[in-house]
Length: 469
Image (cartoon, rainbow, N blue to C red; front, side, top):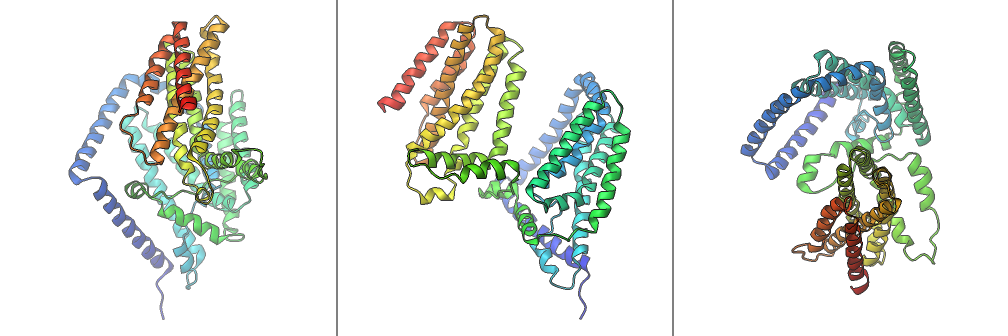
């Protein structure tokens, strides 16, 4: 009895998987779009790209200085092509060896050959991805073709040479992964600092390429020596089933694997192992809120860094931009912070515990207030630069903290009413607080009496919401 070749079996699985995904994408497109709108949208995006490219020509001197910076710091930037696969190694093996391939190994098919086909398929996908990025950069930006080609080829080569190391590092313990990643980051920073005095670009680049080639040769012999196939297959199957278009059309989320490194194994688990204290009324609420924030920590970190960036970019330009920084930070914090509130109720443990919605709201409000205080302390630094009087700076800070607290409390009330199914016609308090936030902060910089009016408004709202109600 003759069997198909390993490549024919691999190709058969791949083609059928692609047909199924194409069919699901077609169904999702039919739900979300129609052909006429897609044609108009495609033409609009193409024309917009050419228009945007023409607009960027006016900023050619800026792009020339950026290009000089990219050439001068070529090595430090290219090293990120090595760090990126290493950071992904904490959650992804890098080669999509799925359960279908594992079943093929039960038949007379070589496991290593199937793995090689997947690795070559990843190399081919990387070629198309970086080719698309290079063409888009050439069309839109005025960068020279030599810079684009050098960077695209270098990033592609770095990712290709990291396929085997990523596969091997994924199977190591979490602290080994953490030490390797942190060590390379420290090495990258040290070499970039050292390059300010000594030109190490060519020597360091050659050493890294030679090291990666040697690691690939040695690692190829140990590909399957300590392989936990159940974990690899589970992660890859989840990655294969993840499709943003289908998730958006069906409103079904497929969560990607999340990293479990130093924070997860040391800080998070240590806190969750602590026994409950009967004297602390809201401890169980705090634990579950803490779990929610740890599961969404990537989004939390991005939001915090974005707010800090706005503070430092706008806070020291002028008094006008400083007031805009306060408005934007408070608005974003209220919107993004309360967006994590519904995520709590997706935790399965919630349905097995007795709880009250007002207790959840109070507990979550305390967490948001701590974060608001930390951000407002950051906003207080530019105020010391713009205000000569320390008392005036303190008055501004108090009024901004109170309006920020009132704003996110209104957002939290609105989301709570949505969760319990109330019909909300017009959220008047949200718009009223936003009006006070917008105009109050702008005029509070010039007129201190406005700060007192903001404090009075927030006092009235607190009395109405928390005492009268």
